[in-house]
Amino acid sequence: MRVFFLFLLTIFSLTLQAQDTGINSSVFVDNKITTEQTPDYAKEKDMADVYYKFIKKKRIVSKDTENDVHKIQLSLVPAIGYTLQTGFAGIVSANLGFYAGEAKNQKISSISSSFTYSQYQQSIIPFVANIWTKDNELNFITDIRYIKYPSQIFGLGGTTDPNTGYSIDFSGFKFHQTVLKEVTKNTFLGIGYYFDSFWQIEPSDNSNQNISTIVDNKLGSKELASGLVLNFLFDNRLNQIYPEQGWHCDISYRANSTVLGSKSNWQSVQADIRTYTHFPEGSKNVLSFWSFDWFTTSKNQPPYLMLPSTGWDDQYNTGRGYIQGRYRGRNMFYLESEYRYRISRNGLLGGVVFGNAQYFSSDISPTYNKPIPGAGLGLRLRLNKHSGANLCLDYGVGADGSRGFFVNLGEVF
Image 1 (cartoon, rainbow, N blue to C red):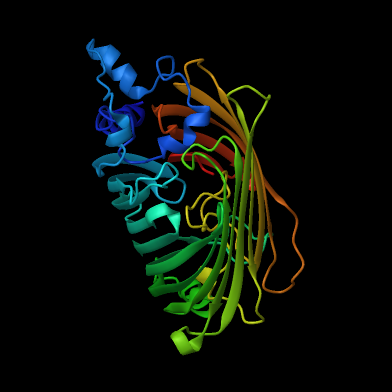
Image 2: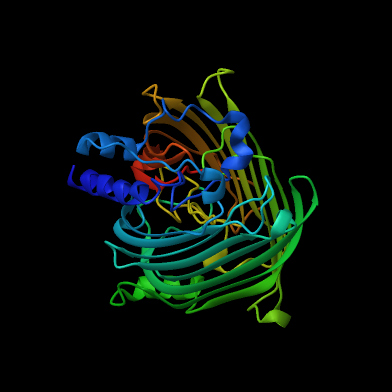
């Protein structure tokens, strides 16, 4: 309950900064392109409404939101998080949002960064930018991250033993830059450069010589990958923060080369496909599906820490019900479905039911192992009724006794 109270304090810090424009200052959505489905905000409620009711004051909302949305929105927000991998974590995050043009369909650009320090002495510092030029002609996507990451590994494939994990420590740096150009409505093609480096890889318990030998043989002391990326993107969702309709399809091909500094030559493909629909039709409940496929397409295998793995997608969200890195292999096929429904009619409190399945191939055989299921329930607390941003608290259950809580600011997919 004390932790939940800290979450409520965080919510207030998020929503109070957005009271003048009706736009969440840490997550943004282009209100102009969602007018077809604009709800009656007088009837909808979020945590800012709860706060103002509690202090018995009227919430002030700007009447000139058409001009306000073009102003630069800046926030600095403290938060509390929790995952199986990090335990409890303290977070300080900053976010900047702005428009590069005046067109009605102009997409909003955002820049965000944060510092996280966890219960398990992990440090995470990301810098993420999604910049749209005027009239959405170009999209610049930047993902830079530094991590100091004591964690566990469990071997390769889908049949690894959860009781044979090894605790390791390592540092990592990631630089991913992609430039996309619109070729037709909602469809983009692009090229990019990806660089990933891990160093000072070592077992947390250096006194165990057997574990030290295993870790040294599987990982070595450092890993480095550098290569070019080709990207295809189709996205016709009206609201990327809380999607209720449409499709998202993002396919990328990565070719790492020793010419560009990579430790070895290897290639991989990621396909991220999502779709959303109201169910029943006409209701505000949403049925969603997510397919995330991650394949090694070369004979050479990626370095161990860059193999397809549970929870190692860019948002660290695959595999609710399992600790990050629980399964790992040359190829990964992932499916998930989630049903989002309202508990309160005003949208303040919602719930979800989800189920997922993972398939992994090992380093010995290209054939898939047995499916690895996961399922769970969750609650949603509305942070901002204009953007649809939620605080997400889920409890997931997996195979072999795996289970735990998962917390997100924003939907899992």
